[in-house]
Amino acid sequence: MRVFVTGASGHIASAVIPELLNNGHQVVGLARSDASAEAVAALGAEVRRGDLDDLDGLRAAAAEADGVIHLAFKHEAMRTGDFTGAVSADMHAHKAIGETLIATDKPFVSTGGTLMLAMAGITGVGGRVGTEDDQSEGGPRTDAANYTISLGQQGVRSSVVRLAPMVHSELDHHGFTHALISFARENGTAAYTGDGSNRWPAANTHDIGVLYRLALEKAPAGSTFHGVGDTGISRKVIAETIAGKLGVKTTSITDEQAPQYLGFLAAFAGFDNPTSNDKTREVLGWEPTHPGWVEDVETGHYFG
Image (cartoon, rainbow, N blue to C red; front, side, top):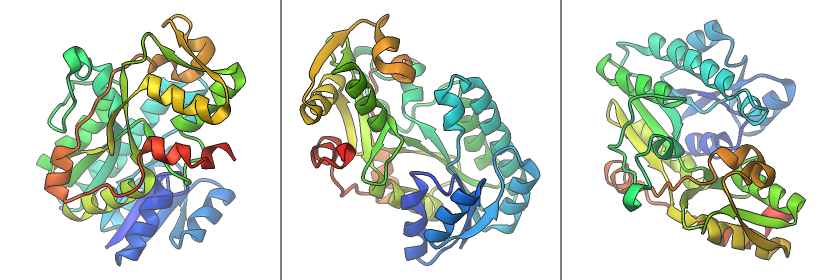
């Protein structure tokens, strides 16, 4: 299968592209800069220059491909405060790709996040664990996921992989784990809100690479999957693990103090997001085999 991958020079793609190539697929990776193009080529993929704002380019690439995996998102804009702009660009990209694939029966695997379930008030209430069947009516990034699911009724074998907030491994250079470590180092303490009992799921990047490949090959139209290995690690344990590696203390903070200690992650700090992967494993036969978050962080590669 000839697969068009957006976000091809990013963290997730660094596992997805080798997984696809090693299983007999061809990959065309979107690259917006010379550096990105070099990274994509180094992975063994064909390079297509462009970005999320080049909607005509996205349409052409989708039309030429046998399937699409959409990993790109304007993370820089999110980190600098333009989350709304990043979400809008992502929605336009989804529609450009999706409309091109209608009535083709081609696979379109898109990306969401399990934290959206917490934002919608689905997980955490009374200890509620989120499942793949949980859907919210709308909201940032959720609208794009809902659009992708709707394509399953329009002749597209569409699916959404909801990623855990902490996708981790030696391939991760800019994710939530790095941010938490950076904030702890800057503040001299690893902070968590309240009693730290709220939970975040996590997944190893190498397992996620396999998941996207399986979704491309096997996902039923209009399906949702959870890229989750650790179904829920308490924020206190996360802080204690980071503090132990840095040699700093841990601190319980209030929601009001979160921006001071956790920067752009403050908006998510108090969310309780336990998330099941049962249906994902059953439908796709996916089995996470790589180290969990605590074990991976304890190896020390994040602190080199």
